[in-house]
Amino acid sequence: MAGWRLIMEEKILRLLEQDSTLEHKQIAIMLNITIEEVEAEIAKMFEKGILLKYKALINWEKTDRELVMAQIELRVTPQRGEGFDKVAERIYQYPEVKNVYLMSGGYDISVMIEGRTMKEVALFVAEKLAPMEFVVSTKTHFVLKKYKEEGVIFDEQSKVMLSDVVTDMKPSGIRKFFDVVAQMPDAISLGVGEPDFVTPWHIRDAGIYSLEKGHTYYTSNSGLIQLREEICKYLNRRFNIRYESNEVLVTVGGSEAIDLCVRSIISNGDEVLIPEPSFVCYTPCTQLAGGVPVPIITRAEDEFKLTPEALKNAITPRTKLLILPFPNNPTGAVMTREDLEKIADVLRDTNIMVLSDEIYAELTYNGRHVSFAEIDGMKERTVLVSGFSKAFAMTGWRLGYACGHPDIISAMTKIHQYAIMSSPTTSQYAAIEAMKNGDEDVAKMASEYNYRRRVILEGVRQIGLSCFEPYGAFYVFPNITSTGLSSNEFCELLLKEQKVAVVPGTAFGESGEGFIRCSYAYSINSINEALSRIEKFVKKYR
Image (cartoon, rainbow, N blue to C red; front, side, top):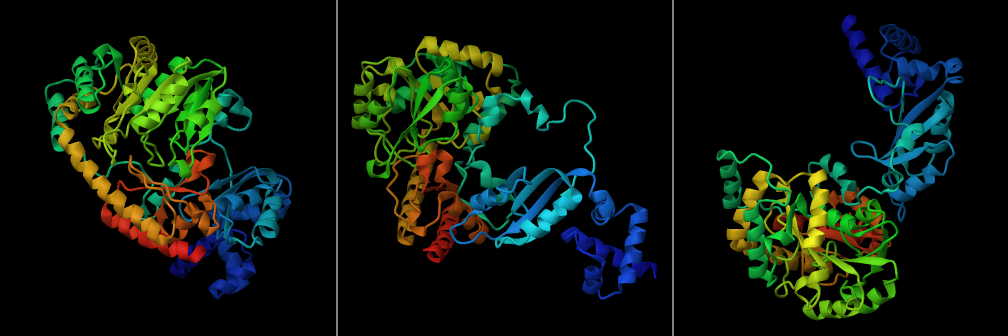
């Protein structure tokens, strides 16, 4: 008898975990037992303290008085032309709803409700959420107690303590899908812009050797002098640009170099011109510095290049900085010497500085990369930003650098010394080896990327998606408007239905609507399988 009760208790708990609003009669029917047996089992679970939440739900006298916080998880199937964003918008229109979130795991949408009674929440779920045509199932949780040992609990009232700039800042659109992908063991991701190659052994070995030699201390704020000298030699050898070691700052990745450059140049209200679509960090870095980001839309018909006409139209008396992100993430666009000279002609009679983000310089497939600092008269106004993550497959080592006029580098170092102190010592020793002896590794990886580039470009075109030919970085940027889906809808439904992760073009600026970014920094087998799944998906929605 005791064994029967344990089994029945477990079955009842499983049912209530799936739907905590089930009535005794419904449970009895599902388990093929009497209502009296259900009531007896539930009464015993009340005594044990197991069914506190269920007890609260069915104790209507109590639920009609106390205000609660509730989380409602929804499993949904968006209708054609209506992705998760539109589903969330429809749910958010109800006055009962405080927040709506896209979730990873077993449920798709999480809805937060505060300041309502349990009865009101239950009725809201039953009468408004559950009947919606896209809702497959619901699961309701109530917050029974908020615990606090030390410090501050962050709620609506305490948000006043946070910076307005940070509060208003949108999270990275690139990372939106990756928690979901992590829960899908058979998913294929073409989303992350990270080499699938391991850092070459001789570079890893140099880092290991530095540890064995006991080089575990801080370096100078600017970085090891040996590394800065090797960076100068490398840039002269590869790109014909001459710098001295006092014009180089070693940073924690190229992203820190971008942030330092913007903060060193921009004052409150200064405008920063940002060609879009482009890497996600430029706008938030500008906002954190008190600047005003001004997007300049680039177009597929111009091969996503910055045109001199578009630049002229964007310049105002408040313009302080132009960001040149080429080769471009996410489009793969490159700027030739002729293209850059036209941009230089626009800037010559201005005091506008230039941040040239050249992290993908080595991954250029139609000839040698040309740096904006090479163009006559532009070196003095240019801060060249690059690093080791992409070309040398060193993403986890977190190392980059900036080169520019000594006054600008000195200002950037001032911020760097207070925020960071110095870049990772082990990574710097590994980077010395990369600068000295890594050219052959870069050439091999670039050749493989170029092969994958041709495969994925041909693949998306055969599927029927138009795509301009990218000659840099490791991304293609196909146009998906022929499916009738928005960028977000396409990516959400592709992940849900075919388990392929790509990034919506809108993650890189509003001008990215109608496009998706696919990285080809993945094995050729993964690329081919992803293309096969994308083809099935596109056929369904065309």
